[in-house]
Image 1: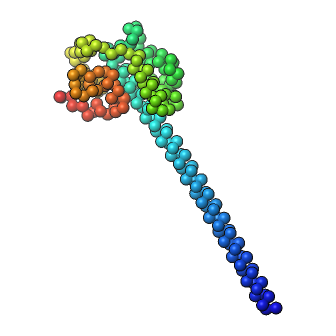
Image 2: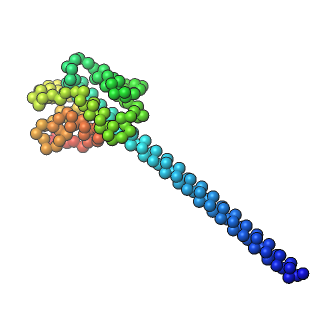
Length: 205
């Protein structure tokens, strides 16, 4: 009888221990599954964040390009292909409408700013296309005409000129070894990708 009781107790212990191991394994599987889910969510969130930053970067580059062209156009250093007397804002509004670019003119500082959700900011390829389309709206002046315009700007008090315009007036040189000083197009393209470069320009040389 005692032997039967002992055997029963041993079997019961084995059963209990087995169930404990099974529960622990289930917990381990659940923890592993939960951890994987968190990791997957973090990966998705990180991917979305990086893509959002990428689109923001393209949008900022476009705003800088438009900003640069606005300065050049308003000071007669480039012109519209049609030669009609249109404000830069008018040209930009037409361009946005033609290329299905939405924007919100909330205030004077945001009048050139398109919405980040526009398709032109979804990839480098789309961005390059819209950027090229924008530059094609304008005509670059001949070297002689541009030089005449720049000399006229130099001859007046330039204390009210923007930092961007001052840099181009001082550094323009069609024979320069630095590509961005040769044309308005090259200068604005450089400003678009790195607006801080004008702060590094030595205007005394």
